[in-house]
Image (cartoon, rainbow, N blue to C red; front, side):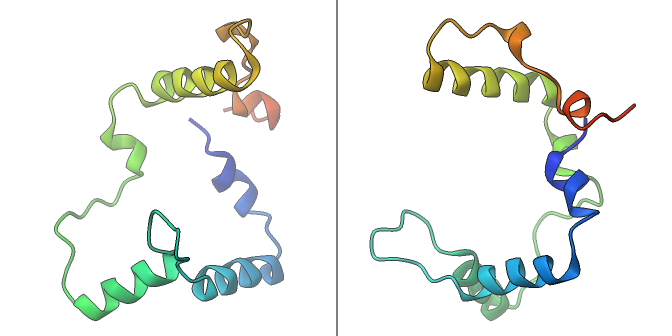
Length: 103
């Protein structure tokens, strides 16, 4: 399965990547936020200074059986929720086709 973010990150200009990293590091958690900001999470992890409990040198998608069909189902559910029940699963186009990849 091709990840859109991985595909496009390969061609991301260095200045854009620096801007994204800066934004992530400088964004703070708001009063009504439901989760800590990425910057807060990274700061807490560094402060804890402990080794992670789980290590895997493979993509996270390898942890979930039937990852691609699951993603397709979740995407379909989202589109149906947003656009109505007339959206059919065969109306979805796989990412690799949109990005014109052979894989």
